[in-house]
Image 1 (cartoon, rainbow, N blue to C red):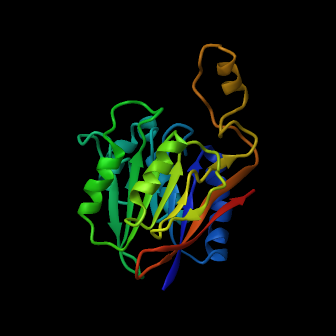
Image 2 (image 1 turned 90 degrees about the vertical axis):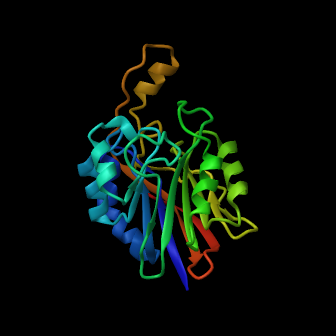
Image 3 (image 1 turned 90 degrees about the horizontal axis):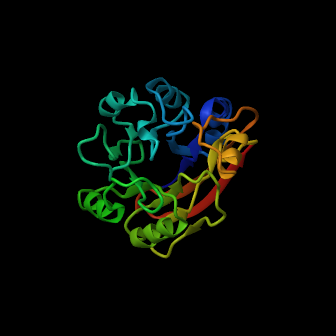
Length: 257
């Protein structure tokens, strides 16, 4: 049995939420999606609120993943403990709220979703994501394993892909907000894309009002980034997976504006 998994790139601001409310069900129906994972760590521009998480679940997300802006809205902390369907990076320090992976029951069998964060170019404090992936995989007896690797460096993402090929169904990158053109199925049957891209304002610098990063690059004092307004896009990828073997047989990037 072949099933389609939809992974949606980092949702940025209200425009990202709005376009998902308008278009997500259309994307799911057109691509015959069986399971949807959305990276929501920038839904509030920096972080996500419990209300925004509930909104994403209401419009069709099965699981929400996060990243380095997990704590951008402190009110999310108790929600991470209470809701098993939202994941923060598993290689965060063990004492922080929430969980980094979960196994979810579906009509086509159990699905494991793992959220990891890279260490190259991101704030210190996380454990080694490669070792954390090994720890998780040793605990699993699940055919379908999906990994959101929230990382800055394309080299770190690609290294993780080679490391996990043959052991998981799919690895996709998030965080950089720029969709890459390297969808592929590895020799061990693992689907991959270096970065899903971004779901949010088209006229922006990775979701932010352009004048703000321009000012920072000119050397001016930094200001807190704000999500841009205006027309938005949805970016992500569809992974076609054999539910019996957990192997990926096809990957296609998507972009809807």
